[in-house]
Amino acid sequence: MTNNNPGAEIAAAEMILASKRLVVFTGAGISTESGIPDFRGPGGIWTKFDPDDFTIQKFLRSEETRRKQWKILLEGGLLSSIKPNRAHLAIAELEEMGRLDCVITQNIDNLHQKAGNSPGRIFELHGNMQWVRCLDCGERYPVEHIREKLKNGVEVPECEICHGILKPDVVFFGETLPPEVLDAATAHSMRCDLFLVVGSSLVVHPAAFMPAYAKEAGARLIIVNIGETPYDSSADILIEGKAGDVMLGIVEKVREKL
Image 1 (cartoon, rainbow, N blue to C red):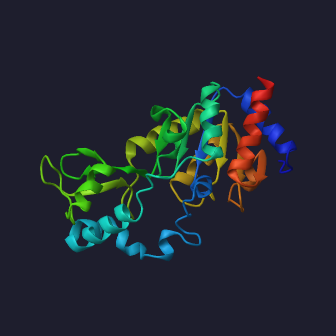
Image 2 (image 1 turned 60 degrees about the vertical axis):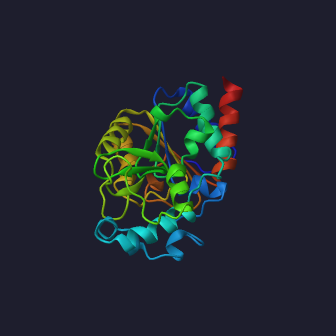
């Protein structure tokens, strides 16, 4: 295991070049550099609101809770103006180079798509804030479409097709992760030969099981993060630093060696 920079970046680049099936796993730490606070960190949403207000049980049971959550999630947290940073762009470049199998992300901000990664290669374990879904018929709407309704005075929007309950297409407390997404992410993790973690503390499960699946299958593990993770001792390369700085350095070295 190594954590010296730039030596570690060179070693990481060499692993990427040798890899046939690279999986990149991203968490909140990659998006903080785009101006999105970590939910649990200073300035994060859980320092301003009670997490109990974001349970699926309360959302389904109470129209008043739905009214409150639409106000919080849409008027205050659309994320539509947020732009991808150097780390997102570096991961997109890995795909352009033909070095990337897929991205597995805990984030709901749509920034991997904005950076240029193919939607079919992105597995969003916790959903995507740019979409709203009907819990009755399954119809999906762009979040901006629902925002227009809120601007026009609708406090609790409903499905235009069946008048069912609409919900941001993200995982609330008390909800399970989308099984088809979780299964696909697990399968990709178990058959990769290199697993690259960028900006995740790897403490939220079941998402945090992914590097374990990869290591058990014989993959090598690179962790890029600020702060410790439970998998640091298992990492083949451990780099502590800002995601944008480190990923830019790694991808530049991959590009030089191609």
